[in-house]
Length: 194
Image (cartoon, rainbow, N blue to C red):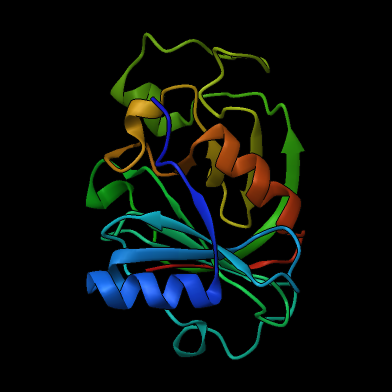
C-alpha cells in the first residue's frame, strides 16, 4: 500500500487553488521540499490537523517531534522551525500500552534488530526471541530509540498498521517516512506524546 500521492505547487498557486476549492488548513498537510528556501510546498490531501509547536515546546533546540495519539500523526519541526513535516503513524493498541509525556531521541539505528519485550512475551509466548535486520523485522528499516525503555519511533514491515491502533507501544511509520525523519531528527531531539 502506498501513501497519498504528492504534487508540488508554488505558494501563490496553492493559495489560489485552496481558495477556489474552499480547502481549509486542517484538511491539508504542508511540508516544505528539500530546499528550505524554495517557493514550493508539497501538499498531501488528508484529514489530519496541522499543529503549532509553540503550545507544546518552549524552544526547538535540536528539533521537536510531537506524536498525536488520537490524530495518529507525528509532527516534526527542525531547530528554528522553518517548516513542519507531518506523517501518518500507527499507535498503541490499547491505553495500557500507551505512554504519554516527554522524552527524547537517545539513539538512531539503520537496520535495527528486534526482541520482544517481557510484556509482549507474557501476552504471546510464541513470539520469536529475536529478529535481525531485514524485511521480516517489525521495526522496519530505521529506528529512533527514545529515553523510555522499550519505546521507539520506527518503520514497519506491515503498512496496513499505519493510521491504526496496532502497535505494542511504539510509534510506527511507513519505511519511506521513517527514512526521511531519521535523516532530520538528531540524538537529543525532543519528543512529546499527547
